[in-house]
Amino acid sequence: MPGSADRGPQTPPPGPRPAAALCDPERGWSVSFVGCGFLVFYHLGATRCLSERAPHLLRDARMFFGASAGALHGVTFLAGVPLDITLKFLTDLVESARSRTMSILHPSFNIVRSLREALHRHLPDNVHQLISGKMCISLTRVSDWENVLVSEFQSKDDVVDALICSSFIPFFFGLIPPTFRGVRYVDGGFTDIRSCFDDKMTITVSPFLGEHDICPKVKSTNFLHIDVCSLSLRFCLENVHLINQVLFPPDVKVLGEICLRGYLDAGRFLEEKGICDRPRPSPSVPSAAPEFLPFSWETASPEASPGAAAWQGRPEVAELLAHLRVSLRPWDESILETLSPKLIAGLSEACRPRGGRWSKICSFLPVKVMSYVMLPCTLPVETALAVAQRLMLWVPDIPADVRWLLSITSQAWVKMLIKTPCSDQKKKAKFSKITHLMSAQLQAQIPLPSLSSSNSSQGFKRGSSSLFFALVLITNTPALSPQRK
Image (tube, rainbow, N blue to C red; front, top):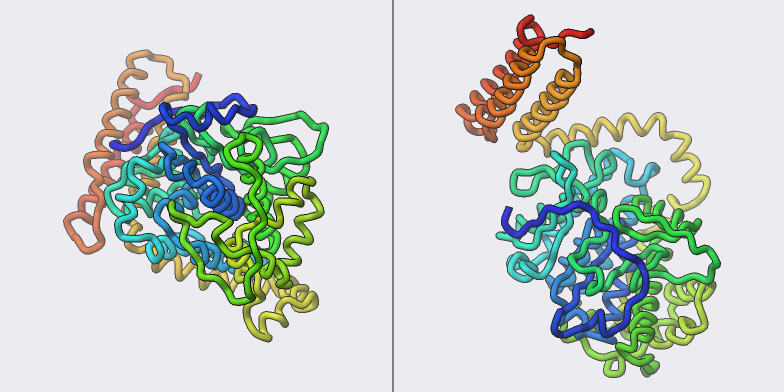
């Protein structure tokens, strides 16, 4: 596949590196965003800080890497999607999940459809040209469970398909994996959640506590670390709590705190590496909302932008900062005065209460308790409606998905028969030969059909019938069927 690379997961050595090793203009450097689900708010804050305090790190980066939500963030950043649009979509997605009694496990919550519609709506038509050769998306191939990195894209649909595959978690997002260029893939985090070519020249952004360039720091004497899919994690309860929030989103205000935490951690990284000095507090501004700026290379410096003092007085922002100060270090306490006004304004809008009286009524504890009590009555009805809706949306993809299900079923059946002991070597050789013929016949005689083509559907039926009779032939022919000892 052009623009892709197959490789197994690699475990990079943890530990800090000097700034000269990270920002070598001759060798170049890369930026890797760790897959983190709903904790992608952390990437927003960290990227905002880098674009304001050290824009050359992003502008001159050789390559961007990402898996799952990290890939989504990298693509939207390179495509120049405005900050307010990104925050609005993420907060709407979080509130949609939290409004359901079973969160993302509720049958009516279709995150794949929401992501696909949002990507088609907000990404520019030339996004494949903007990110080709600049963004590497991590995928996990279903057939052999190998990691694949894709960096070349031919169209906008190509980019959207790759992002959907990189974010797809089986059972949580669906049962049948999506396709990218005719091949089934799932979340790239299963095989390599922290993608890179050269660890020494890669700046890693991770919302989990561990040994990474930009990640949360805590005062602890716990030095135990575990490596999960090439990601270094500190063995502590904070990480357990964060991992739970990857799939089951917390309140939007908590995610806002995580976003500000990403900004502070990125600022600390820049000062520790000597890439830039501690920024000066920005002047205050009037209470009118400033214009949202997109994530672009030419972001104004914090000294030239309006300050955040006026926005910190808002109730939503004041509550965020109050919760954030509980776990801050002294350095972080001082950098709060230099927070990005654009980021604070966006979080203020995102955390502002939405909805009318009905929304407030549904947030009362007695109403929530009643919703859980009535769940055995309401869940079957909601499930039936959701299943009917998904079946209607599934109709165009039924032939391809059925073909794939037949393929994996035949492969599982053949592997089971091959492992069965056989007394005669000649019978075993014949059996192995017929299984290879079956696999070739399945690939040749079951084309990708279209519902509007009668010839394709006939070929699909013909291939399915030939597969069925081949299985019957193997299991019932004495000369080929294996014998148990």
